[in-house]
Length: 371
Image (spheres, rainbow, N blue to C red):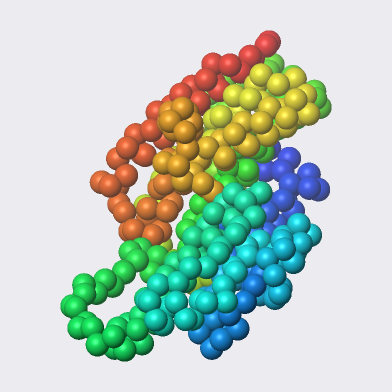
């Protein structure tokens, strides 16, 4: 009986002109476009320079800032008031004003001041941009003092501790390495959570579910036949995501691929059960779409996909404890970047197991089979 029910589901998917295109195209588009767009690195900050010093020292500082890769020079103004106009027009994000006595003070006294003024309408861009620029200026002044100021004064160079920074798990600090594994979670969530939510309610609208209700098919068998095709689709989509990540971005899992597949199956149990619960309580496809979209938006934003959970308010961190997406995002990043195994992922596996049992039990119990 289960075999024929599953065959029916695959035939319904194939007969739909839109679903096969979505199943094939969505993972490809997500993996090829979103890793480049969903990038929270702050770069290409528009910088306006007011160089009242106009010396070799000030020009070296400007070149150092531009060559850092974070800033692009969009304006050279003769005065601070003129530079403010470029801020007001939206042409610049940060103003760096170098005073007329900058080189003199730096060479003679070993200290100099300059002004960094940031447009913080976008607080993240303004705050991080000014911090980047301040670090560049501090590094430049320290280099000048070490090379020129101290030897001129005849000062003895005191020994210093040399710090070498080593980045673990993502040594090149490439944001795509961080995002690609998490975007695979979004692919599985949409294909295996959103689509099952439209399945049962779609049969309600067409009237075909009445034919199932008069058969001796049990509720468990019916729900199982509904989710197995989407689990299969999810595995195919996940495999294609693995291939795109390896070929296009050169990103391969540090851990075992079998670990990812086994835990992906556990997540598919969870998210497909959640979708079927919504489908059972919805009367129309439009209602199911809006309810599912509401939950997906909240779950994605509170999953740690784009922003760290530790940076959220305390109440939001408590809410994320009831978010299954959070746990699978952590699993994907841990296995891909750290090479974690089952032993290190005990908390996440336990949470997903509880969610899977809860949502699938709810889906079976909430399905109202009428004879």
